[in-house]
Amino acid sequence: MALYLHVRITVKADQVAAFIKAARKFLETRFLPKQKWELIAAFQATGANYFGDLAERSNAAREKHPLEVTFINVWRMSDIVDLSEIMLELSEFGPYIDLDARVTDESQDVALRVIDSDSNGDAELIKKVKAARCCAMVRHYVDRANLAEFVVNFGALVPSWEHGLVYCGTYQNVTGLLNEFWDVWIVEPALDLAAFRAKLSALVVAGGKDAVTQAFRHSIDFDKDGPDDGIVMVEPAEYWTKP
Image (cartoon, rainbow, N blue to C red; front, side):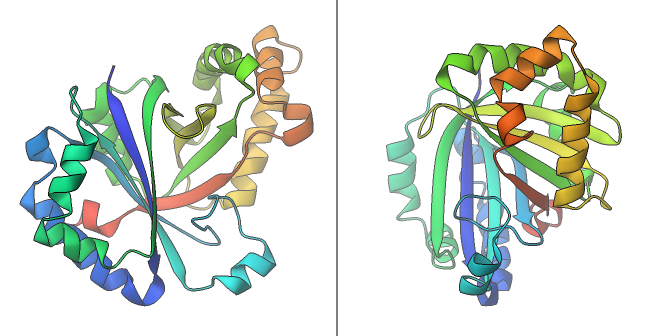
């Protein structure tokens, strides 16, 4: 089973152009592909998203940090991964040093894709996401007692939920918070964060008393917390789609 590195990066607004330029130069070196890594998604957050916990900002938080932009990269790593060795090499690699100089904060988690979409592996997923205009990343914090319940029942529900949405898989952390899951969806550009959340809620409610839906509702504590524990609306990053 492939491992993925989920990287969240904060860049000051006045450094975004320089960051994108440096990211292009770094990707052109193929440093990580030579290590058998592949960039399967690169996003830029849109609207009122932020790095700290990747949920919508409160008004106070927006006023405190108005000039930050979040980028999110997802790398499929090689089967044999020595992160410490790769990071050491990167720390001495000029194009990466230039890229890193534009970054104000960064967070990394290793993850597994625990629920697949119907796509034909990563190649088809990359094609779909690169062509998308708008995507959503949906976070779930699942109680440890409900992990299997969440994965099994969500996987069974997804095919019935793709109404104007394209599901691209669910990832679970294997470092950091191990009960943190992220779904990736391609959505209609007209959907903002609130409208997308309302649509997810409606899909869960529409299942009524169906046993699978009820088990899923229980696994995410839907009646108390709603359909998610944070949503970030994103678009494919320019350094990924326009090399």
